[in-house]
Image (cartoon, rainbow over all chains, first blue to last red; front, top):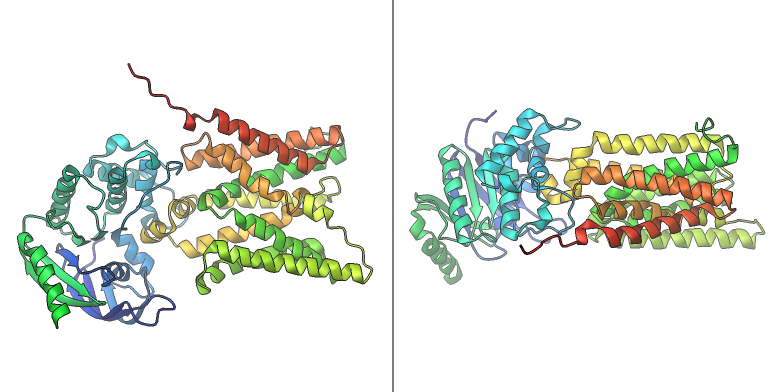
Length: 249
Length: 276
């Protein structure tokens, strides 16, 4: 069931890695509506991935509050992650990994199924639909380790889509893809946004954005330095200017 | 349990022990090798060895002390690698060192006091001097290991695939991972009297490694590994007792030979492409 209210509501959030002397996110406040397409930019180490992992509850919030899909992230990380897809950055699998593509995509449903439940018809249908969306049905029985980096990336994206997520967090989703795959994924993400799914991507590939206004967040030293809407053609310049502005300040 | 097939009580006990121990170790071995924590078995075996030595020194039941030590190590690995911010491998190395130090200290001290202590049984196993209760315990742990994998199959596969991805899809990784370590520790501690602390490693790693040469799916590995382990272990026990050879070392050698053959004939290394 889809929750009501904004997709993400974060107030004064601080996130710190265990043992770190300084927080990686500092006093971050942010509201993201349903069906928004958000691009996060900023230099390496600015806190982009940390922000994604704070949203889905994989990193602990030390101060502040975060509501995601109507759930308080603190103490409800598992429930949040059942509604939020997260494509991790740069993954590749060993050729001997004993999992087929279909099995990997099915894993996307495991959290939703809960403990002790076996995959049912609904789960198998969701997997088939996700494979079809990514146009990789023909790879279903192939071992994931035998695929190229781009194909593996598509499989992991299908794994996230199989969950029927309300929010998709994508960390460098275009990094291993060829130009045809990038265009196809871009079209798919645009369609998902139209269907009301919130898409948040960390990317440096600014050619692959939807042909519609997007919201841009620029992270600098664990803070949001800029938050504005702009056309896809402006994104690169806006992020560049925000970076220069902070450096010159 | 198998008296109707093997009338000789000693041989029957040995076969039963090898069968249950090999199936339990092989099932858990698939998890251990796929998460790449095979040194866990080695460390737990030595912790159990240390526990048994302490038990003997304090005139307590050495098997129970071995189980407690193995389980304690299982519960220390996770928190030690989390809190001390070291890899699980380093945590295992630290615990292995402590276990060996404790074991050697107590064995040496007992010798100084004039108390005899034979470490051979614990190091290399002894299948013919097992009590019926110990075989029942092994049967129970074998069932526990199989049921554990069947019931938590999807969580286990998620963790094996990638712990971080498993966490991101909503699997409760930590409780399942610790439960996994607990079952492994229990199995290792109970198998030490049969297989021995040093040879146990072969049972934990080799059947899974053999299965990996032929299986493209994890579910197939969970079937092939225990079948291979059971067949070779029962054959080893029968051959060892028939020809008066040490059972556990003989079975370890047989498992290793089958692994070499599996590597040679594995279809995974064959190139089937033909230019038409």
